Structures are given as C-alpha cells and as structure tokens.
Length: 371
Image (cartoon, rainbow, N blue to C red):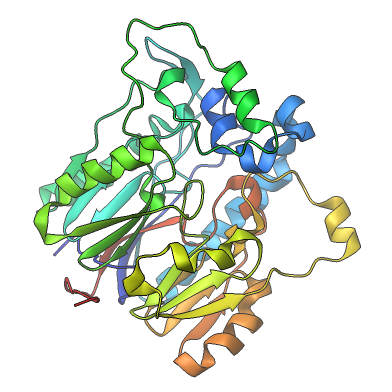
C-alpha cells in the first residue's frame, strides 16, 4: 500500500521531510501568541521586536541540519519525499483576519496518517492556515495511487473561536489574552470551533491518544472519532497544552520515552489506565554551561523538543546528538540502538526529528495493543 502507518515505531519505508526556511517569524497575531504563550509570555520576545530573533545563521544552520536528516534517512534505505518551498513569505487574508503564510517545515504538525488515510487536521494558528498547500502535491500523488485523503473542517478562527480556559491564570497570561482578544460580538461568531493539530495525537494501532486540554481540542477528539469510525478508539487526555510528541513518545508497545523534568513526570497518571503499567524511560534535561545559558536564543519551543526522537524501527531511533549517549545507556536493555544527527535550532523553529518528518509508509498491520 502506498500509504500505510498504524503507529510510530514499525519499520519505516517512506517519509516526508519538511522544507522551506523562513527568514522571519510569521505575523505575531492573537493565535501565534496564544499558541506559544507558555514560552514567550512576559518575556522581551512577547512585547518587543520579536522578528530579530531568527537570524540568517539560524536559517542556514537549520537548513543544513534538516538536509543531514534527509540524507541519513536515505542512507537507511528509506524513501524520502520533500515538501515544496515557498518562493517568498506571502501575506494572506480571509474575510475575518490577516496573517502570513509559513512553510511546511514541521510537516507532522498539521497531518495525521491513520492506516491508509491521510487526515489534514484543522489549523490551530492562523499563520499555518495554508501550510499544507506545500505538501498537497504529494497527497494528490498518494490519492491517485489508492490512498484515502480527508480534511477536517476549516475553522473561521475568529478571536472568539479560541478557548482560553487552559491558559495559566497564575502568571497573568490568561488575563492578558482575554484583554487583547476582540471581545466585540462578531456576526459570524459560533463559539469555540474544532481546532487541533496532528501532533496532538499519538497512534497506537487501534487506539489513538489525543491531547485535549481545551474545548477546541475536545471537539477535535469528537470529530476524529467520527472520522476514523468504530475500528478505532480515540482516547482524550490532558497532559500538556498542545503537542504530545515532546512529552510522551512510545518507542514500541509497552515502552515510552518521557522527559524527567517539569510537569512531564506527572503525565503518567493522566494516561489511560491501560498504559500506566508500561515501562517509562525517564530522560533528564541536558545540562548547560553558564556560557550556553547566557548566549541562548529566545525559544518558541520548550527544551523538551530536543527529545523529539524519530523511530526508524522498534530497534532504532534518531535523536539529538547531546542525548545520544544517555539514550543509548537507557535503551540498551531494550535492544534499541541510537544514532544522532544535529538539530541545533529546534527550539527556535519549534520542531526536531519527529516534528520535521511525516511517516507515510511503515511495514505494519493494524493491531490492538490493549486487548
């Protein structure tokens, strides 16, 4: 089958690797600030000239690293396809808001592969509204060869469409976002809309976990269950704000990688009870020197993004070089080998090895791991 993927660990045969490197950040609109609020609220980035934080060095080095990842995957006999690059950053406009486009760099975020079906998820940020256009040439090719291809309802994305209930009140962030949103009644207002990312989901055969921390994502869980039908069970959990793949990464049935620091060590009790007896490998945050801390750039993603590993098979993963040794030690008893390739600016661009790839075909069949 041209499209066939039921989980994140079976032997990888074909993958899309992101492409397109922005020289500036997208428009810092309401949706952008809300999505990254846990990392930027109250910092200079949030109130100042944020566009200066992506430099030519960032762009060149991240492009080098993504190309190295693509070449590494090819060397492992995996077919690598690429998204198209925008020729320039276009401004975009709907009847309800203005923004800019963004390239399909983190291709996993806006898509979900379930068996032989490509599911385009509804955007959660206005600047990502047209992002999948840069990979639709591949989706059309797969469709012509027999794959199924569906798309979740596109939201209007009015300010009132966003549920703010999950934003941390203790920091003052929730009050801030309530103030800056347009609270004037809009004649198109329909309340909270379906909005969730593919990266909110983790596929475990017949079960799909979806992080649903607000009403937008809970509506997304309901839509996804209807879309995949009775052959699947969609499990909503509330573990993080949005994307799960830097908080919990299953490496095969019964084994998952979990960062040891921050709130993530408390994630296990929030998982479905069927998963709570799994083996969890806890990986500590990498230690930084004083010089590294003083010179680090403003980050959009949290440090957890560096544990955003990609499984090539049940016995091989690709990770950030600074985690290669500790992961090799921790996973040796599970007979999992570790190879690394750099992602120096994954926190700036919001995605590492897992985010930058979308597995199209793995050598797998649909299984029930909890029966």
